[in-house]
Image (cartoon, rainbow, N blue to C red):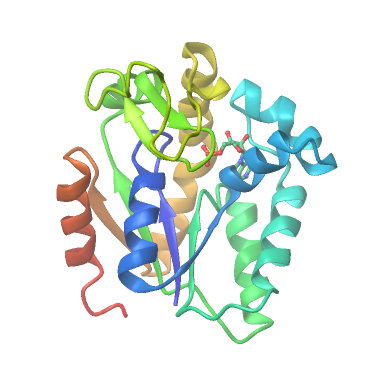
Length: 215
Ligand code: AMP
């Protein structure tokens, strides 16, 4: 099963990815996490993506498509893949369809996390994450420990692109470039939408209802 998790920045894709991977035994491919890991390790890929990421812009399609093709070509012992943060443009959706067709595979479901715009800026600018394990906090809704040390020992920080200017840019980019991807999957009968406004647990429940019969 190839499951796509689509939604604006701040909708909770990272949090729900962790639950979905566990509940459905999927291998996650999170393009944002891959870029951040490469940035932290100063690899050529990280350096190439750095400027786009810090401004809240999308990395070039061909770069992201190559990266995902490479991941999809590696052996996968689980029941499928969960794509988090990809595809983000119609070009990427079409490229994914082609690369899967070459392996006689196709997307099973595109799950859209739906949330009103006005909730997103608050979620994004208050978000704090662990540099090591990726755990997520929020200054108001789920405050991190005062010493900003995660249970895993990692440092809790604010992502560069969660600052006011970059976050607002990311929302504009989502509307212009990624919303059409939801329509693209809807036209193919593959879109299932859930409200992402509630608690992580409530959203997880809505997702399992939306995915009933898909696996
Ligand atoms: P995310 O953690 O998914 O919000 O991704 C962080 C940043 O990585 C984005 O703002 C983009 O700069 C870059 N990125 C991640 N996934 C993609 C993608 N599918 N296409 C283009 N850029 C991406």
